[in-house]
Image (cartoon, rainbow, N blue to C red; front, side, top):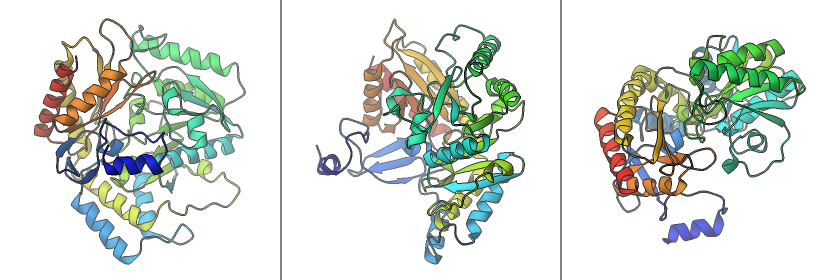
Length: 427
């Protein structure tokens, strides 16, 4: 065990997860690559858990942060803040939420916590509908609506949470149905559930489940849910912390794959918008955002230096059509990985969209998760210079691939070749 790892274990919580048998200290990065303390170079296919959205050390973001830090770093929301207003204007426009208001936080967890506060206050109900296999953060309320046992350390919660079918297409009681029958069955389940409870405040859902292993329902499921929700006055919260800003390629927001009945009432975001800076937030219709009847502030949400980073990062994303790049390069990457996995009896599924790709591993000849092999693939990929993530529902056996959206075709080919070899070596 190296000295830094020993020091980490002495002063930080035991439950603070670290990847790899010999944990890695990343010291710097550039583009789609990072370097460790020993000088080893890695192709980064996880981007700080989908947070380094555009590139490491993106010059526009570095320059914006440096210049803003030279003027003022922070003043709080008690004072007018030009960068915060400017970024809020742009996000409100991009959100497609009518009469949108934006509130900035420091993380996705805090954004989801705020969304739950708004929904329960607006609807005067503490009942929340959430998806099985979901993850929404690590605050007390966010843990209380997380449908993933591995990331839910307590059953205590300020909310009553009811879990709905549909977030995982290829598992569960409806997996054998075709897409249209799957959606119909999930809608009937939702209707039945609502017949047994007091009116909920909201449904919160990730369009593509992140920690759950990059699973998703058929396109249109949440639009079909929306018809049922609207009939009961129930709000729809789209958790776009991992799916937002064009990562899924075909859409700027994940919810747009389910837009037949309009945009969500509330959208939460974080991770990629700051490209590593602590930026999260909530977009909601004005009547919902303004429903609170007490004062509030955010000490660090919307601080000038993080807003400067967000503005520069968003401008770069849009000007260079990184959503289009995610669609094109992600499409090539997923097909390359499917071809590599076709002869591997331990690969249950290669799934995803854009640059948000999951490889689910199971024990050959069974449908049981194989977390040991997932850990082995991570180690083998690292040894060849590639960093990836992992996740999954009942057990952590899905590889998660989510590089910066500026990934090149050549880099995608290199990463795919390393992953193919890592899978071969761990059979």
